[in-house]
Length: 255
Picture: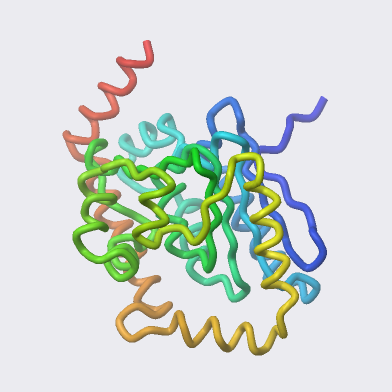
C-alpha cells in the first residue's frame, strides 16, 4: 500500500493547485515536501496551459513551518538543507501569479512565504507567527527585506523578531493578507481568486506583475541575494548554543 502524498497537485482549469497534505504534523515541512513543492512549481511554470498558481493547506493548518526534528538534525550539521534553499529560490522566481489560501496555523515559513504571494485569502481563524528568535534563529525567505517593505519596520519587527502572533484581522489590517473569509468559505474564495487572475490577458498580467514587483532595491535580484544572506546567518545560528538550548527545551516539552 502506497503512502498518502504529503504534497498533492491538481488542475482547476488554468490554475495549478498545490496542497500541503500532512495532517498529522499540521503540514510541517520536511525536506521531501520542499523538494516536491519546488518540482510541482517548476512543472507548472513550464506548462503553457497554466496561468496561475494556487497554494493551499488543510482545514486548520496551512503550515506549522519547518519540521522541528529536521531543524534538530540541521543543528548537528550547521547548514540549511539544499531542498529548503531550492524551494525559497523557486518561490522568489515564479513568473506566474501566486495566490495563497490560509486556514488555521501559518507558522514560520507558513507566514514568510505570504510575502511572495500576489494575493492572499485567509480564514477568520488563521494565526500567523514566526518564532525565529525564540528558537535562536533569524528570519528567512527574504522576509527581512520584504517584511519592512510591505509592513513597515515596526510591524515587521513585531512579527519577525518579537514573534508576536497576528490573527487574521491584524494580518489584513497591516497588509499581510488581502481578504478574510469564514473558514468554510476559504477554499472556494481562494480558488475563485486564482481563477479570476488566470482568466486575465496573460501578457498584460505578466507585464503588470513585473512592473509592480521590480522595485529598485527590492527586485528579484535583491530578493534572491537576501535569501542567500539570510541562509548563511540561519546556518550560523543553527550551530549556535542558543539554538541547541532552544531545541533541547522543545524536545523536553514533547516528552
